[in-house]
Amino acid sequence: MNKKVFQLLVENSSGVLSRISGLFSRRGYNIESITAGVTADPRYTRITIVASGDDEILDQIEKQVEKLVDVRNIKVLDPADSVYRELCLIKVEVSEDKREPLLALSNIFRANIVDVGPESLIIELLGNPSKIEAFLELLRGYTIAELARTGVTGLSRGLNDVVWLD
Image 1 (cartoon, rainbow, N blue to C red):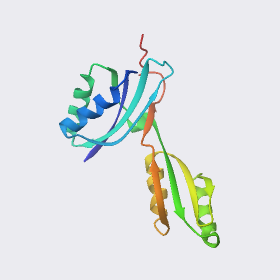
Image 2 (image 1 turned 30 degrees about the vertical axis):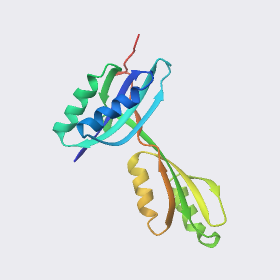
Image 3 (image 1 turned 180 degrees about the horizontal axis):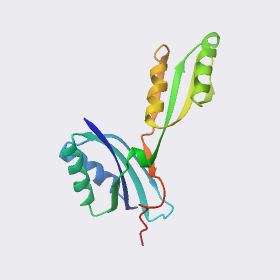
Image 4 (image 1 turned 180 degrees about the vertical axis):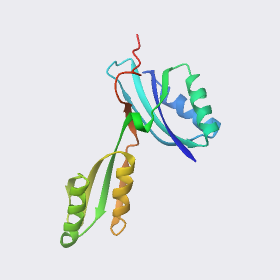
C-alpha cells in the first residue's frame, strides 16, 4: 500500500466536503486523514487528503476528484518538495511521582504540556506525521487515556506551483 497527499482547492460552498468524501466512499477508496479550511481568499477552501492504495487506485482517485464540479485544482504534494504538519493531543495517565521522564521526553520532541491534572497530563505535539508516530512509539510504557489527531495539512515549497484563482 502506498500513500499520497492530495491538496485540493475547492469552491467554498455548502456540502463540498460531503460530495468529496462521498466520492471516496462510493468508490471504496480509503481516506487516512482529511483536513479542510478556508484559504486567504474566502471563496475557496483548501482540503488536504491522505489516501492509501496501490498506484492504480491513487491515480484513479486523482482523476475522479478532478472531475468534481467544485474542485478548482488538485495536486499531489511530493514529500520532498512540501511541508506537512499535524497536531496531536495526547492525554497520558501518569502520577506526579512518575512525570519527570515523560516531561523530559516531551521536551526532546518540543511538545507542550497544555493541561496538568492529579493523575494525568495532556501533551500537545505539532510536527510531521513521522515525528508524531515516533513520539507515540516512545509512549508505549505509559497509559494513553485519550488521543486526538487533526490529520495532515501541508503546502508545497516555493511559488513555482502556486495556483492563483480569479
